[in-house]
Image 1 (cartoon, helix red, strand yellow):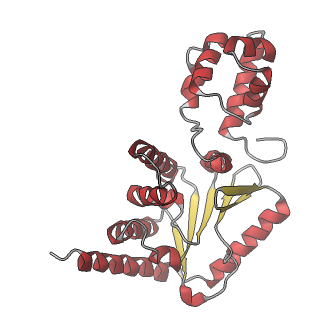
Image 2 (cartoon, helix red, strand yellow; image 1 turned 180 degrees about the horizontal axis):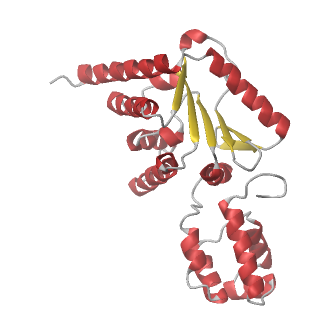
Image 3 (cartoon, helix red, strand yellow; image 1 turned 180 degrees about the vertical axis):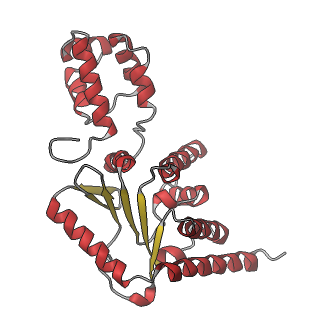
Length: 279
């Protein structure tokens, strides 16, 4: 844990290990930079967890420190292709004991099917290539695997009905996506509640919210907009976000009714698929 009470991210742990190995090897940042063929400032950024080396730099670090591929292998688990504004959140969620999502217009990433994730990616990357799409879907599925672990965080999903009805990827993709969410709720992996359109205005109407709680650190809140995101650790702001989530949860449908509604809307998408492609 960091001195300010926030958990250390994976990249910060990477940087701390790099610093320890460099000092053990008797090298200054300047000396390591000469061996890696980069600037001492870049080494400083690596050690502070502000940046990650690229694969070539990681290989040169391993050669310089005689670490037998240690930093190269670790780098593979620290995906630098995740958007910069979400990287810290993606690392911290691995340490969370409780996760609370609010999905305003989209199903939250940890709950997405591969087909739904792919459709979302295609929508905001019009000039994508197939390889990039496949990598994105694999990364998203890898993140979701934390919910399959025995030590999985307690996970809440508060979904706006609009996110259930928006036909992302077509009726078949949506039906599969919603059945997955309902299955997760019925298996106990997710505590599911739906804010119906009939509920009107609510405390989270302005947008997406993601809350993370930890066993030995203060909770965090994350909000996201178009091409940007903000991770908040200020206690007052985080508490205010938790209050907003609680207020919205109070306006949501009960758990069993929420699961039934998700199933019902999934069936509506299935019927739309059958009408579009009759046998």
